[in-house]
Amino acid sequence: MCCPSPIVVPVPPATTTPTSRERWRAWACPVARGPPHRGSLPGVLRTHWDALSDSVRDAVESQVGTVISAETAAEGLNSALALVLRTGTRAVFLKGLRTDHPGSAAQQREAMINAHVLDVAPELVWQTEIEGWHLLAFDHVDGRHADYSPGSADLPKVIATMDVLNRLPCPDLPLKQAERRWATYVDDASALDLLRGDSLLHTDFNPLNILINDGSTYIVDWAWPTRGAAWIDPACLILRLMAAGHTAAEAESWAARTVAWTAAPTAGIAVFADASRRMWREIARNDPQPWKQRMATVADAWAAYMS
Image (tube, rainbow, N blue to C red):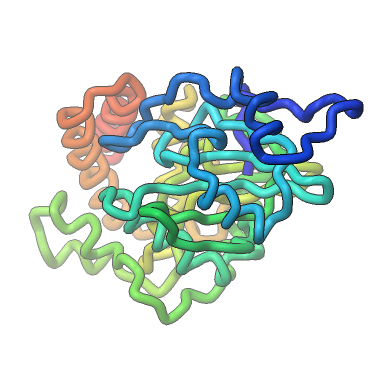
């Protein structure tokens, strides 16, 4: 996994070979100890590699090898740690949260589902809890985020990857259930049956969660794996496409290219659109970041289109 515009701890010149951790830190710290970034989860501050204790870095290096460069991701700020670590032979994406942070439960879910989604996601190669951190290390995908704008050549790739995900069996794990996840936003309890299903869903098709590399497309950040109706993932994509500039009709035309959408009931889509409107209004009201306000606006527009 990769994000653009990283804060980079560069590889030392070939003539400089650190002989100890202290020499490495002395060389790297002018960049590695830059100011922390505040993330979008409450209480999340982005932590750089060099700010970790020796014992935490040692634990990581015992699994991935000696780190010769560390890049702090500048986007996707839901993790306190979001680092591309490079050794002499490999690169991994290390993400982490404090174990007492509410978001750590989502990170645990991401670890739980990984072995079941390797057809569309990078592999989790290692995880641990140490000194109050929960750490996940994934194979690094040296890719770029998907472009959702109208006319983008990335859109068919996203649709094809969603179809691959749709074919994966839903594992027997304690996943979120769609009819329960959205129950708060649906007044008619009987309508929730329209969201019920046995498909494995990702449910967060933010373009930051789609990576494209050498013709391959990956879905990352599996914080909310859910069991439900297969068409819910394409429905989630509709809102993201609208946020990128598509009209509701244009966004739905892309969703209609997925296999899952062929079985989508009109009544179910309308229920989900209205639930999404209510959900995003609540999110934007509680945390009025511009992108959340934008999502609330497009959710309103989609619900109006479906009514």
